[in-house]
Image (cartoon, rainbow, N blue to C red; front, side, top):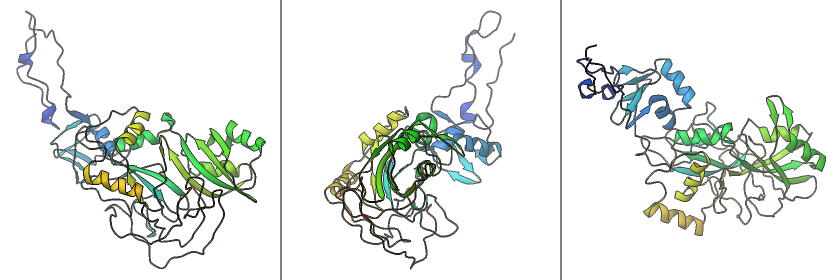
Amino acid sequence: MSKPTNPTRNPRNPKLSTPDPEAENYNLDGEATVATKVSTAGTEKLQKALARMGLGSRRQMEEVIKAGRVSINTNAASIGDRVAQGDEIRVDGRLIKYKSENEKRRRIIAYYKPEGEICSANDPEGRPTVYDRLPKLTHDRWVMVGRLDINSTGLLLFTNDGELAHRLMHPSNQIEREYAVRVLGEVTPQIASKLTAGVELEDGLAKFDDIQEAGGSGVNKWYNVKLKEGRNREVRRLFESQDLKVSRLLRTKYGSFSLPKELRTGRFLELDKRDIHDLTDLVNLRPRQGTGLYGMAKRKQERIKDKPLKARRSRTSDRIESGSPASKGRPASSGGPASKGRSGTAGSPASKGRSEGRNRSERPNGSDTRGNKRGRS
C-alpha cells in the first residue's frame, strides 16, 4: 500500500483539511500506524454556533442548514460542517458575525414585564413588545428565556447566549419557576392535593410541585406555586381544571434567580457574575472569562439598588393595581414609556392614546404597583 501524496482538502472550509500524511507514522509496508485525524481545535459545529448566537434552537438551525439557507465562505453548508474564527457565515444572505464561545462575554438581564406587552420581537398588530425597552446590542441579540402572556407580569430573563437560553427552557433540565397567583375562589386541601398529584390537561399530565397560601381577603386569595415546566398558560389551565379562575399571575422566580425588590415594572437590571454563574451551574455550562459587571456598569447597578428607578407602565394600559406578595415595599407605579435603549430587533411601537379603565384591588401586603390579570406559565 503506497502513501498518499496530497493532503485531503475540505472544500467548504480549507482550515479543516486533513493534515499532511507525510507527518504520520508508517510501517515498512507503507501502511499508516496512526489513524489520520482532522483537528477540531478552535472549531465548533455550525448548528451549535448558530443556536448559541440566538438564531434558534439546534434543531431549527439543522432544518435551516438542510434547506440550503446557510453558507460558509461562499460555499453551501451542510449538517456536520464546523466553523472557526474568521469564517464568513451567512444565513439567507445575511452576514452573521461569528465569535467563538470563549471570546463572547455572556450577559443576562432581568426585566419586570408589565401588562400589555407581548413576548415577541415583532408584532403585526403594532402592539408594544418586551424588546422595546431592552438595551441595544451590536452584532448580537437578546434571546428570551421563557414567555409570559400579554396580560402577565413579572420576571423575564434575556441572554445573549442562545445555548444557555435553550438549556434553561428545555424540559429535561427541570428548571423550577415560581409564580404568585391571585385566584377567584378558595383552593381547598382536596384541590391542592389534586393539583400537586397531577391533572390531565389537553396536552398531557400537568402538576404543581408546590402550592402555598399567601394571604388575601374576600373571594380573592393569593397562592405561591412552583412547577418545572413552561407549557402555554399551564398555571391558569391547572386552576381552571378545578373550576377556579386566575385573576392575576406574576412570575417571581426562574431557576436560581428571584425578582429583585429594587426592580420596578417596565425596568431591567443586568445580572452580575455570581447570579450568572448560579444559572449556568443549573444547566452544566462552563463559566466564561469577562462575565459580570465592571466599572461604570457595576456602579450604575449599585445606584439602582440604593435608589430604584420609577416604574414604567405599558403604553397600552393606564391601570393601577395594588402590590403583590413578591413586591413588598414597592411604591405605586408612575411615569410613562421611555424612548431610549430600545432594541433594534423590537417590534413596531403601539399607537398613542390607548388606555384602559383604572382598577385598584387589594393584595396581601397592601402595597401598590402595576400588574396584570392573565399569564402564560
